[in-house]
Image (tube, rainbow over all chains, first blue to last red):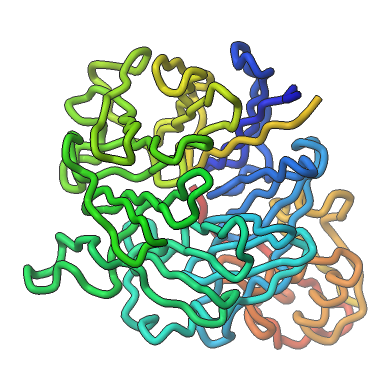
Length: 360
Length: 87
């Protein structure tokens, strides 16, 4: 029986935790945690209640913070978060994921590390950084960052990593070798003859459909996509949406055909909600048709966006959806996106949103 | 023995860690190693590699800019400071 619903926020000035009961009516905010470091991603392990926060500080470098008491106390480590000595040092942790008991961290500059001891020490997954295309990876506006990690739920050898702006990469051998998985995703910023390269795409977000590891959804700098074969080929699903640009994509935790996006007005138009009116867009049929969900979201004079990791769903039966803005507002819906309201305001810019539901 | 003063922003990362220490060390790097032994992880916060301080960490020995290899004479004052950065 779920009893505690937590929303975990990474912000430009630390981590925050919101907590409610399964009715998700009243929320209590705690933070800032992690000594107000820029925190890019916060995840929770519902099996243990442990919270992990990844970020980087301009003075003190990258770290993964851990709390085993829901945020009351924290420790931090970057032991082993170091690639090759002569290369640019790891600046920050950008993404975290659990695959069984293994904790994974994507970093800037783009690389992947794993920890078998809950983040106390880290080992470089050199295969990704050693990919032959590595010298041609270029940073996006947020840097050369490994910002999403998807772990196959049943095959511990399979991972997908999203890198701006190198694209999606997949391993089937536990990280030793990687292949680009970008076929069908566009690079509008390339010359016409080079619009569909093998790598170099500016992927913004990837998500895995519930119970279907081969069904992936993607928000790219240039379009929205779905794949039915683990990213070997991608098909556009942007028809019916107000733009081709946005940052996050969220898969419904129970229904593989339901997916959420937060389209913005375009990469050279300010990257705001279109026409100053905010909407989350939902498809119930795997991206074939879209519905805009606006009730409770501002419908005039809104000039914010939602960043690549800043939208999430909770796993309750009636799914909650959460969207954190780059102006520090967290909007929440407890009815699958039909109605929205702000549950935190005046926060620092929100980098990431995740949820964790704990039993009584 | 040498005296080491740590940047105030570092101290909350190691609860209970004083801002000023006396350690036995012949170089800046050795002083940081000595502190890391008492406060595990402190070295990683200050150094980006075995032979380099982080980009925005500055070291001064008796008032002069220093690096990890800089020698520490007996009684030296080592200041480790955060550069003007952040936002």
